[in-house]
Image 1 (tube, rainbow over the protein chains, first blue to last red):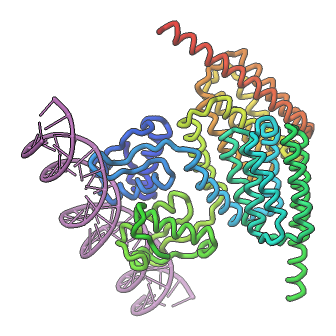
Image 2: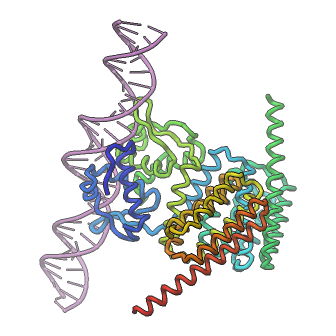
Image 3: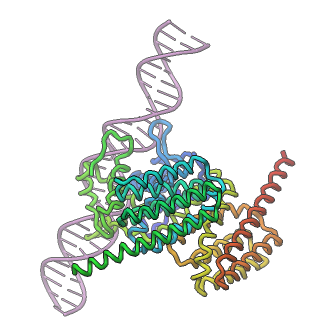
Length: 247
Length: 247
DNA sequence: TGTGCTTCAAATGCCAGACAATTAGAAGGA
DNA sequence: TCCTTCTAATTGTCTGGCATTTGAAGCACA
């Protein structure tokens, strides 16, 4: 592992990249202990703070974990879906909120991905997943519910649908798409009438899943997508009109 | 922003979390300059190296960028899809390689997600996307091609399909699923006969996209999924038999 | 021999201070 | 007006050190 002194990148970034490559390529295997900070500093011919900055970079990506004490050190972390979820969600959320992705684009992607889970979920969903969805539908019908709570319940409903597919890779990929939409959805105010429409579609979807009917589930999601996009259009149009009146 | 002295987490992790929250919640907006390292050290009542470790953590997630010089400092980064791709791919790759996810599970997820793009890509794919796919098909037919190069070409082919949907959110999510499969695919040796099968299916898919036929595209992907899984089964079965003979 | 306590050493976590490198802007001169 | 030079601010890096944690070895004692 060597560094390029001519590189414009920070030393700590170069060191982090070198170690990351070693992990990804399999040179360093899971639970293997890295050399101590002092040893790494020697190997790369830099100071210990620089090595530490590199290790913190890797820790931020959950590639390593550190342990204090006599037998401590930095260890290659077995990256779990559990750990990867929050990062995936944070990144997806920021991508949507900072990149002027239109609501329509985000919505289209989310429902396209979710439809991909529909047949699998219809086939494999457990009673538990179905119960979660029914419970969330029930919650969504409560009158005093805030818009934020309604959206949060919506997310739980859809995640149960996705998890029903029983494929951790799908769940991981979809977590970002579904959760990242939440801040965008929170910008919408739902009338009682809107909520009734959405809940009715949720019931259709839950019924389809209960009947193990993948096609009907996908149809329900498509209907929900149309409803959501129509709702967003009207809300945004109304706001634009208000702005015009004020200005 | 305050720190919890009783927390088991490192100070730098706590500081990073505090700043990350501020970014995600919108308290810090894009391109806004953070206080200098010295000021942050004062605010959090820690030393500058500790602040620096926190900032490196955020930099590793592309949440901030740093600039040296008189008007330099750390700035909230506008997270671009461009920057997010490599991280998404690294994480997905490690999740697949370290988590004993079966080949079938990964394959199922990948093709389910890709099928979700099929109708959109059939509708919107540009001539450029189609040309890329045809070119990769041509490359895949060359006799001297190594298995690794064949897989790499396969990835390019499928990414063109996904990008054809013209939805950056889909492209981002799918990049992980498609690229992360590559190391798994590289474990397979393709006979000339296998390659011919796969290329024929690629041709079917390209034809369907050229005809703007979303359903046929999805069917082609399903056929390809079956072919891939069948191939993997036979390869793994053969290896298991060899191991048994040896042992 | 076995058990529990003490001590030790290695490693990370954190800090203070300093210097180098970089860069924008201010100051000054042609 | 334009170019050069200086200056100040900021990040990048290093040195050295102390605090804290923690497993393991050593030791006393039953």
